[in-house]
Length: 233
Image 1: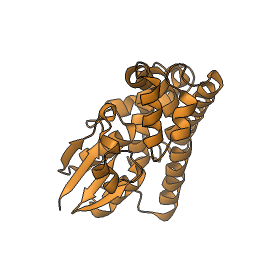
Image 2: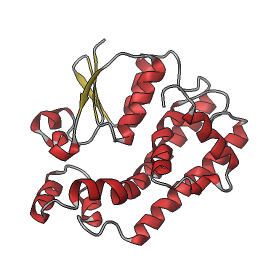
Image 3: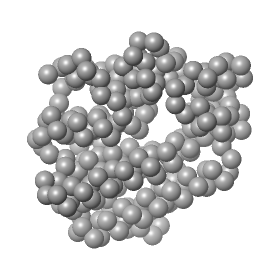
Image 4: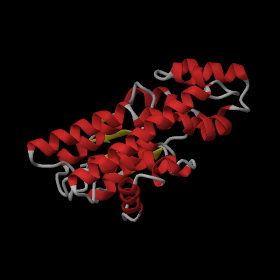
């Protein structure tokens, strides 16, 4: 089976797919896209992914988009080692976590990421007209970029809300590890939720926000320590 991955080195959504591929020992062909040059907005790429985001997995010529969908798809077509619980109740709990991850920490991490790194690096010195033209070409997230702006970044209230959502995520991981007995979020088995949360938490640590969990969430801190020592992170 031919697997191709269109991805970006700095994209957390791309990172979780790469972790999943590594965990399963799957060979794949890399197509790295560069946002600064608009690779994700070319007509060729938009035919594969009309949302104009990464990653996109192409399996035997058929594109699969959305990172959470991709990792679930990979677990179905490459079932060993399994990253999804076999019993119905733990599997339902994993699905709950996956939905929460998409709604809360994934969009939350984008706010400090763009505010502190991507906006200054990619957009701050871009002429305003060019920035607005780039925003207009985006199939998704026009409102996100407009709220951010090219110069000022996101409002303090939006940053605070994002950090609050990451704190909530860390609290839930802490409680889940206690309840399940660990060492992973759902218990003894390393699953897709450990995979998908890893790049988000690592990004927050890289941005200097590890204090959101290190001071008073020992099980969350221990979980992240185990994640950092895992071979494919």
